[in-house]
View 1 (cartoon, rainbow, N blue to C red):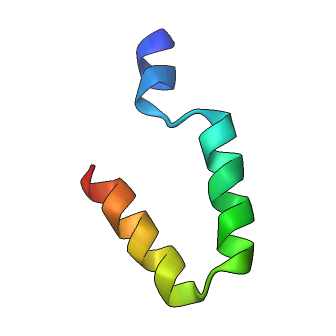
View 2 (spheres, rainbow, N blue to C red):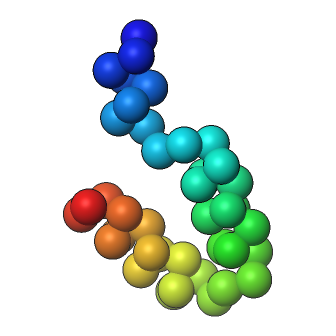
Amino acid sequence: METVQLRNPPRRQLKKLDEDSLTKQPEEVFDVLEKLGEG
């Protein structure tokens, strides 16, 4: 269970991403998601 949780980003980071996506343009949001996917 721990290993699976470690692979997922912290809830705090997810919430921050959600809040940022509300203020950013869709293109910027997709760019951020792409970078997160690569990293």
